[in-house]
Length: 498
Image (cartoon, rainbow, N blue to C red; front, side, top):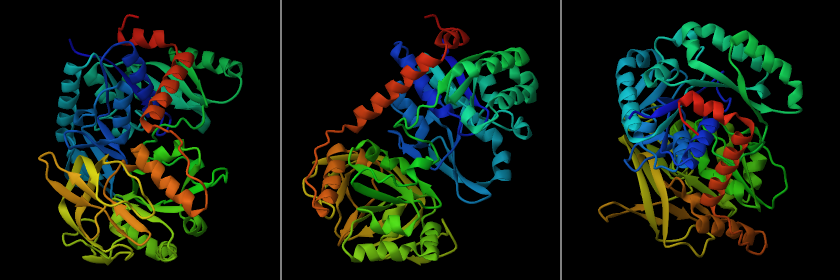
């Protein structure tokens, strides 16, 4: 039997679709049903590598985790990664297809739609329930015929739609009503509303709930309170409270907020550590005075490196490394720390060669093919200041280019048993291609304790298990949805008996 389904659409971007989808995945999994997330088209610079070696949006990997299933390419068959104001890299079924302008992408629509519907149908044959997520707003009426991610997808799946609006943004009733009004016949698929991030006394909201039902014929079946920091992955925007220091925790980690920053969820594990404050910043004082400065991944390493030069932040990073203060680079950040980046095929810019920061004895050449694979790695040598390390680390690679490096830190163990060197260190600087390296609890804690030692502080054994903390956060969120959404109504929409 084909899977039952529900689709979460929103009145706009950033209203809570991804988190609501994840919470529903966990609730349905708790019922003993097999459930999978699905987003036909995602636009995000945060991505994840599946066991198949394909790239999907990080949000869908997180939703799969909430559903207690392994991420698959089919869960996000089209991923768009912004490269410029007018163009994106198009990833189809997990693999890079090409780079396109918006006009070229719309001409590509039928190919993308075929891939999307086939991916959904494969999932629907393997799972009891599919939780679909839309993108942006379904009321973008200029795109109604071409879109492959909102109402056209709901129609293909035969899925009822739950529309969510964020009251914290203002105008929630207007956005709910306006969405229904603009959609005409497609509005019939919207069965109910959820209001997210409400602050205050809900009884004050009740007259509005009655009025919106009277005007649209649809009930508001949930009002979710503003719950603050949830400890869960954000999809494609760094929360504002992570861009400023609160001064409450002794160990300060500054992540350079690159213009094309990607996979910033690499640093989420630090949020759970009781002695660490992590901040995403471009302020010289934050970068220069942190206990550790990290250059993160980038969708366009060359352009972000040139921007560091333009703003003078390259000088700040180099000077702190010369003082012997820790600097780390992950993926694109690792490439920036080397002597040079060569781009002979013009993959990222029209610069055939760009000088790096010169903090590592490495050189990177950008090729035509992207490396995407899950990885396990042996430790060859610890990064500067670190001592005990686990025998093996887990992570994943997503990078364009190969780096020739002296003093490798790790060996990536390939499926056939072959080993590939990874990472490099020089002085107080080090880098690696391994995304997810800070998910490894013992590695993360040893790194933090090395920073504590530099400040004359005793080591701390926090006992934080990141996987358990994430799972607990998902459960708390699922419990909040059970408390504040009429789940019986949701299951009736889907035809699931409870």
